[in-house]
Length: 101
Image (cartoon, rainbow, N blue to C red; front, side, top):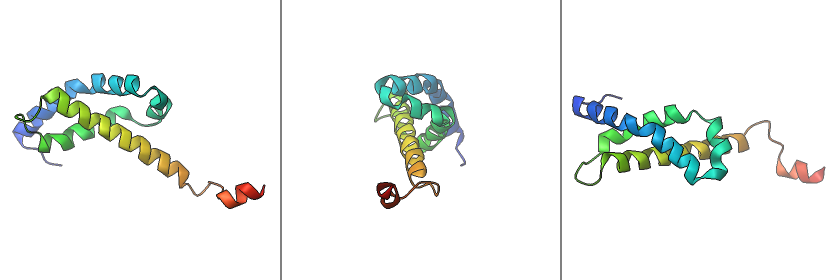
């Protein structure tokens, strides 16, 4: 992903939001804490910032608000993707077989 110098500067500003945004997601969704521990939250957050830097419009929202929401959405999507991956695992016993036991 190639960012313009302006987008890169914006992403650097937004990186300050990462620790607070991850902590906010942990506090807001206490039932997901264990699942957040199974993913690399920091990497997911930094990727979300880089993607969101392309579409950020300073006239629409503040940096902290926009990037906090981008991080939150990316973390929730990654948790869901991780959950689906485990569910669709080839090691998973089919429901019909489990009911027969």
